[in-house]
Image (cartoon, rainbow, N blue to C red; front, top):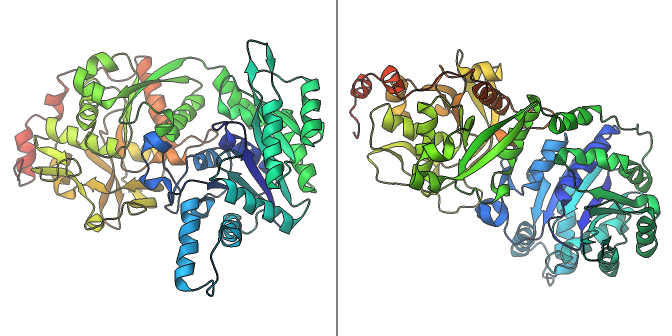
Length: 565
């Protein structure tokens, strides 16, 4: 029978439940167990797909096309757990299903209430998230103990524990030990209070994970154990990590977290975890041979979590090359207002990520032009790839009216246009091209060299696409279409094949990068930036345009059309 771990949080939000949950999965997998991970979110949105990145951070897309919480990215990066549309449930999705069933008449005329109908649906969602063949299902409950929004979820997991019985369910509560500089000591009272709140709800935490800036003493551990009704061995210290979040599994195993879980769940025949690969990863982060700087020019640059997976994927590439990647975060609007040279000078690579709408587009195009003209390694993702196409069409292929119909619906040359199946779509939630699609990698291209195979499966989240009406003039002008979705003939990857790295991808490769297995595109992009920092890349120059495009008008004529037609 599948056993369950419920991870809850108290005192304050943003304690790192997602990372702790992911680290727990690592420890159990290293003990030979198969795990699944799920996030329960208390917000009323059905999913985060329609939420602003400033409000929620990035929207993480699963292989089967679900728009989910960014914590699922931590789950996939750390563990081998299969993440899918059942791995994230929200208050909105739970209530939507209950209301659907009520309208259908499934409740046989009864009054529909939070208990039992909402809590029953939450438990159904939990069982859906625990896939077949799983030894341990880990469920993170969003929010903080005491939040009104979280109460139905906490009640549901309380009932769940009663049904399965002791030894089959473990409650892990993440709490905070604040340090007061005025008195020079850490305080345990907030932890005692949050555990008291959980016990009022009917849940006795089995394991306490105590977040702290400084080491707690043995006296504090025993005090927490006594007042919170747990044994001392199950009070786990989780200090702030000095170098990287990927140290957390190592810290938890040193604290005996895996042994506490094995004892609580009465797991048999598990092996002691071997984390030598994670130790080596920690060393790569802690002892880099040097560092490089990569500029990220984006629309939501003020919030780190808006591009969380991209930043993590860049760090994975850096660890692979044993170099620290320093980020230069630049707002696209600043590039538009101030110019690219002053803001980007000295960086070793440029990445332009996704983003919807017109704001910042012209700044992104200026940044991409600067990278192309100066032979700086460039990586465009989703909207970044589309901006790359617009820049090349305007400045090299002789199509000055090139634009995206997303920002300018009546533009003369929509080199980026709305996907045919998106025409007439009015609802925004869950209606984009989402999830994994196959991409045929064109032989002889830089993309093919990087991947080392001719077919890849990558995740998408977009409505607009490369307009095939402009494929020929752009290719004549020197742009290579190196990845194709064959079912529709859509361009997925574009590149300048004569560069070490100058590539744009319509999909989101950052969602499939792991610290122990960096995505090939991020690995090679960081490698190209490292080579550029050493002076091993091509020498850039403003005269490059003439070599690539001796006659922009000739490129259009070769395609049998004129710019703007």
